[in-house]
Length: 230
Image (cartoon, rainbow, N blue to C red):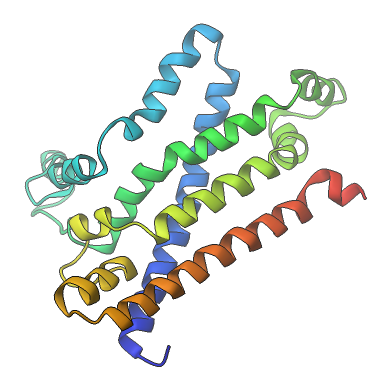
């Protein structure tokens, strides 16, 4: 806990995991709402598309992002073709690449939890709010969003825990060297044979993940509409 290098890697891991969780929530809510509102005939195809990252190995998925984010990848070639940039920009082997890869992995878990929360809401609730003069924005913000708090809490908890403990995506897409706490733990075990230090880091990671689970669970119960009424 007094080593500046370890604290730097742990801090970067924590910040990237928070960013990934926030991005998954922002992207996941519209997808969950789309699945919730979609007719029954369209719900299965949308579900398959949303869950498609879980149907592919994490290793294969990470290497797929190399093709997209590389110097001659899809994004750089598209930007050059549109004349928005003159030369390729560095997207691969950066913290941004880690974040993109992790969002791709954890997004289905966020969507599933949000859909589960939305499915428990009676459609008549939003219709009643509309009959009382609320527009769509107010219905979502004042009625549906508070009722989704349990699903949001579960999705945030799961996505943060998966992000902070991920290894394959940071190892494949991130900068060289120990760029994530999991890659640092791996280096201590496999390369440096510092099993004591690696075990201590793994234990600290477990404490942080468990604290996040219990803390977010308590916050979810506190913000739930039923608890606020009490």
